[in-house]
Length: 286
Image 1 (cartoon, rainbow, N blue to C red):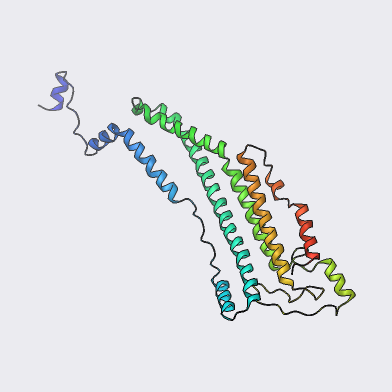
Image 2: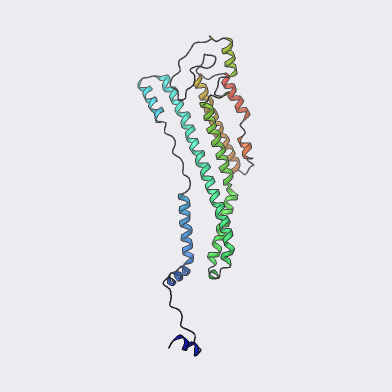
């Protein structure tokens, strides 16, 4: 008996043959809660794998080799100066990697959480009114719960401000190295007092020989009495520690719930420290 005869007898037509994907759809719908949990876990793993990692600290192997050569030559002065160089540059490179990682990681967390909150906030109303999810309350509540968690993390930890603070410290640290290598006054260039003394008495003081240098500094200061590089290196180490301590102080204040201030305020250099460095430039370190 065909469909026309069934219709004429008042009987409904037979159902259409089942599609091959219908069982799969039924299984997904039946286990939707567990599948959604698995998707969330997989996305968390991928998100963690894409997070910026800590950069490898620059290997000062050349400086280490020069220290070993100086030890073989039994040159105590050269060993002492090179070990100071190694300590300063290791400190600089280590903090540089830390600030680079902090800037990238904090911004990555903030941007990804922000995008996640915006997207899930937009699709949650659509999930609520979807007829197929009327009996799947877990799937409707899950995006809203993730939005609440993401919003709480952003507001509580303030990853954006953290990224800005690390970025500002990174710029200051890189700029300090540029000033060091380019011999910018008053911390790294000839001091005003030394220049005046040299102009008044250009032949004063014994000449000294400069040993190994990491950067091309003059052999002697402007007054021709003191080595130029150790003074500049000492000021460079002082400025590195100042930047690190300021960053640590701001982070401690932030964690204690205090007002850290704007990024522009945190970027303003410590005037007292700069004056102290300028004073140290007038009295070179032997």
